[in-house]
Image 1 (spheres, rainbow, N blue to C red):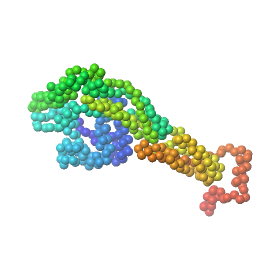
Image 2 (spheres, rainbow, N blue to C red):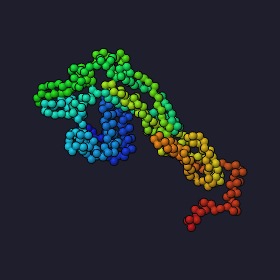
Image 3 (cartoon, rainbow, N blue to C red):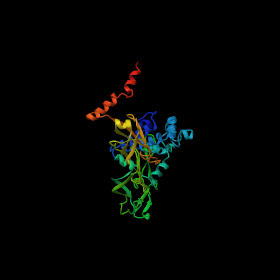
Image 4 (cartoon, one colour):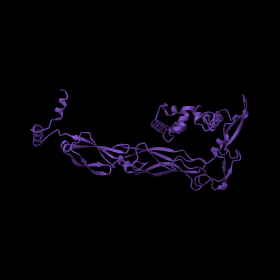
Length: 381
């Protein structure tokens, strides 16, 4: 039942960069997300992955964890209190659950593992877990922004009872068995003496409340299962790996709490000609050897349509020309990158008789300049 090392959970070592940690988290979160992984322990592993990233994804928490281990990131642990008040990285709630399941709360021996805080958390309204999904879009849609409709199964909080599950507020009363704590204590005799075990209240199922008359809309559940078309507004300039958050479209809340959020990770399909590097757009443009030598003007495709570009005389193969302000928009800063045009010199494989005569005259002319190859050969003499 001991916690696993956070680096082990994410499958990385301590030398991993922040980008490596983020990539590992995304990989493991997708692998164990309960929506896609139906194994019995998927939900627990998903929570374990999120806990590991919460620490390793934060520079200060990561530094404390690297130095002190779990104690360094426990608010009641060694690093913050100078002792072992938080039982290293377990935390009071987690340790209470572990001992409640196997040994009871050990009240007869005077131990207290934060049970009251754990119990109150179960009876309070809490926000639901977040959901994650991927969405692929075309390159130009990512540049200009686009709206997409996806269909999702979602549990929405009942509007009639606001998630309480009751017909009215007067139909809710404190559970007389657990007195609102959601937990009851059972005492049993063992070889070690009398043991107390804290378990979920069988009458209110841990909510701490009894509903006398249920809401007719949700039948006491507090939520309604719906299949909805969700509009996702993807901002201009979004890049692969970035996420869009849709509020309230995650897993349902607890005890009438709000739903979690939906995070949509965007995957941008590659373009046939354009390539994005940062906020700059790269494209290769072919021109003839004559145009490269003499210079010319060409209409170059950009993500916003064709734009005239001046090719200076003497342009060399592979030379890059910058078109300022014709790149992608940064979704955070709103700054716009540039378009980088790489020139490809197109040498004809076949010539007409007239074209060949012109090239021969250039090569054999009396006033011709020394060729590049001739200058190259002179270096070996």
